[in-house]
Image (tube, rainbow, N blue to C red; front, side, top):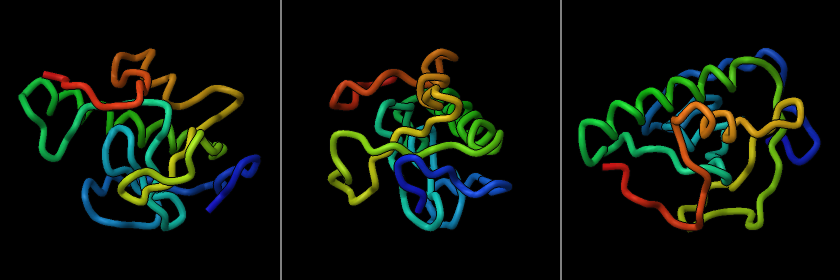
Length: 124
């Protein structure tokens, strides 16, 4: 896995995998498999997709998932450590950064996620 200051491999193609593991794929709007490791995007909270708690969360979560895959496929990005290395579920906590800007911030700016506040809040 790429670490702080190292870009992911050029040409990596991120598909959408939802629940299954993979080499390079997006699970939902704030979780992805990168180089075979499950990564939770540390600076955002995106709507749940499995299971969503209402129709509007399902729709927004699907849009966030697809957009995250687009952003990750737009070119190399860095994985930066957050305040903790892993979360409760064993996922690596990382901020994805391209050209000095967080990909999570892009999702927040587009209304597809919100900044991480230390806990999840309902989307419905």
